[in-house]
Image 1 (cartoon, rainbow, N blue to C red):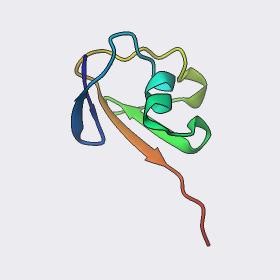
Image 2 (spheres, rainbow, N blue to C red):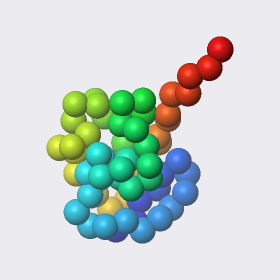
Image 3 (cartoon, rainbow, N blue to C red):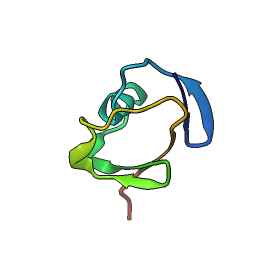
Image 4 (cartoon, helix red, strand yellow):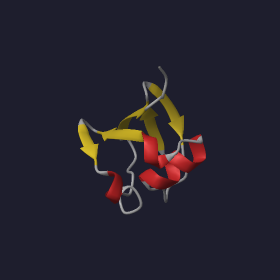
Length: 66
């Protein structure tokens, strides 16, 4: 299925959750915020939220520093 992630279109497996997408892309789910089609996905729902063809996602990862 085709998804748009951070402005880039790509092909992904049909059976994919937000948690699976984060794992594939190497993101730590503890330090990332996910917006799906304009709505924030709660971290507690990452594993249960199935992605659908055409979804538009924005992934924002927190970075520590000082």
